[in-house]
Amino acid sequence: MNALARLNVFLTLIDRLSGLLARIAMGLVIVLVGAMLYEVVSRRIFDSPTIWAFDFSYMVNGTIFLGAAGYALLQNEHIRIDFFSARLSLRAQHAVNAIFYIFLFLPVMFIICQAAFGDAYEALVTGQVERVSPWAPVVWPYYTAVCVGLCVLFAQSVVQAIRHLIGIAHPTTLALVAMDQGGE
Image (cartoon, rainbow, N blue to C red; front, side):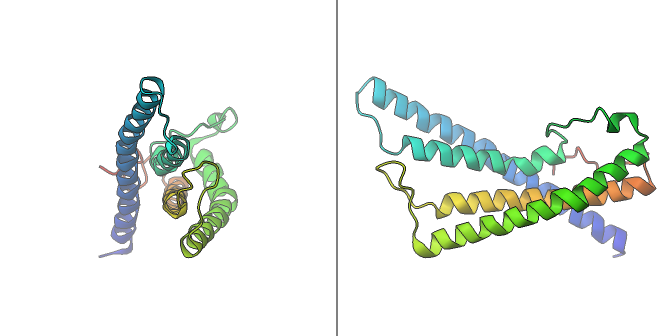
């Protein structure tokens, strides 16, 4: 297998991982809606609020948000302010994006991923609980989900940086695998 084929396999693998995590996040939306519906019925109809609704909702909502972040990047759905770069040639746009990813976004994301891993590990080892509500759930599952979502976003950012580097040399062709393929 030549280097280009191996690179294509790597890019496709990360794209599929982003897509998988996004599908899991979509499933969690249903879980979140069901749990919040249960809370509203319990609170309003039976006058018996749950002690877990607040913690559960922010943990699942954060997991959904970060679980879909890599896929949103793959689909080019993150908010961009491109009034400047839209006026550039396609090659220059790829160059600006590559520089942004390599020198700004990837280093920052790497540091954030390291911090998230450290937090998840510490929460697991110490049995840390969330003390905001009386439920006091352990937080390592949530911190782990945050870490996984951030790491997949980081990996997808590496893929996008590679695609933009390829786009500098070949601006009119989509870099190896279609960027809007969505891991399908």
